[in-house]
Image (tube, rainbow, N blue to C red; front, side, top):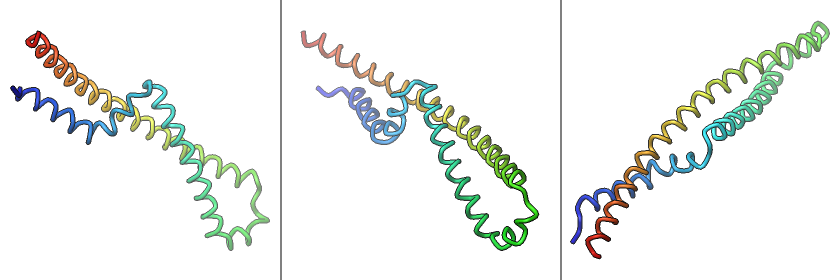
Length: 134
């Protein structure tokens, strides 16, 4: 005999695994701090690469101005501005990434808790069926 509640639960589990679980389940392979630090570091590296590309693009776009005024500028001025811009951009990206990945981890944890609750319910269905059979 087919238990309707068991079938509904199995359908929920399958749907979860195909949709939400594809994103949430891999997140839970990490400890909270490891997941957050790993992804924030990836964000910092990507921000660094983006900033270098941005500086190069600005230098190319403003090359005429730079060539005409190179004698008026010092390495300290240019380096200081570039470094301060980098620090500000990196701080914004790291803060944003930190907030985003903390939320993502917490949402995944809640989602997986719900999934594990459904698995426990399914396990209890199987235990009940086993007791009835024996």
